[in-house]
Image 1: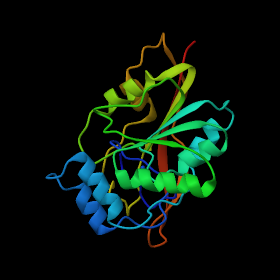
Image 2 (image 1 turned 60 degrees about the horizontal axis):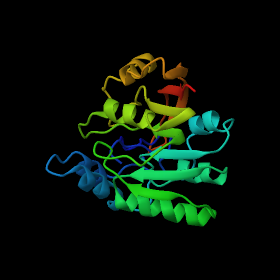
Image 3 (image 1 turned 45 degrees about the vertical axis):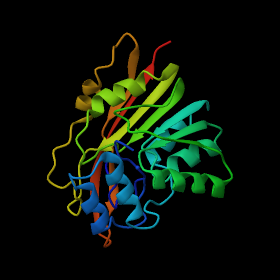
Image 4 (image 1 turned 90 degrees about the vertical axis):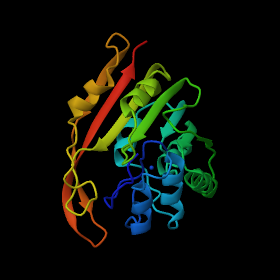
Length: 237
């Protein structure tokens, strides 16, 4: 559930998303931090505070993980404006795109139509509901948020939607550049992220638990290195 930073990465917020095309506006940031608003109001306000936010490109780590997989049913949690969803659909996946913000879902549908692909959009507050499975791929990119929520419980339920042989791909911010509003925060390691899911080892196996480093670009052209935490698990069977 985090609004993505200006770091060339696409989507993600928890109750709802993608690579930034430009910086988050002060208005967008303020509405996310307004405790008087509900979850949907915060994220809808974030998106309507400006025009299209993210770049529309898929996350590089999604491409890396999903490209070798046989297309099936995919669930994009916190789809934002649909960059990952559109990329998956173009490669033959039947994609369900989920966000809490109606404007994000509308932009996802627009992006899919522009690309000539089909996606199914569903509005969910992830703590309250999830789409019906099973899915062969569940992706959750930068599903971090200033809104308090039981993310681990949501991700465990999402893993439970996997078909046998299906993969959960979880990517988080592992560090933040100096210009980020995440600056000064402590981030869990990839192993801590994996262990926090508390998935039964007899049902799920860890395929990847690591922390790759990449270059990030700030809204004013700043350049710095940041770490992502990556967890990929596969449902046995």
